Length: 157
Image (cartoon, rainbow, N blue to C red; front, side, top):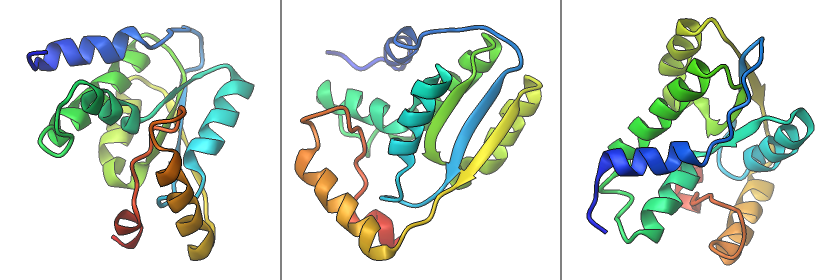
């Protein structure tokens, strides 16, 4: 498959179920790798009936199509940002399954632009528990719906 940013963006956006309603809000996390962001995101998404968005899913898509994630990291970030704009413009509340601290200002500006609220959840766990989860996840990567690619190296950053 020949690489096209627009085709990749369309593929990501086409998979998102829109559910317009007011008020529009987002939920995200302040937490490092292995602290349970994806677990909590999926539980909340199911209970609230809203979409869970993860950048790791975009990375997985790139990988499945044979592209190097590191080479396309800026495109992955752009797609994630455009996904947020798409959801907010369509009044679709969602959960952003990332550590929002890496894109804090951008997230605040996006939500202000659409007059939407952004709720933050801080998650903490011990170093031992986080590393245990990361290593367990590494064994099952690709065998389930776990899209995370976090490693011990990411934990120590």
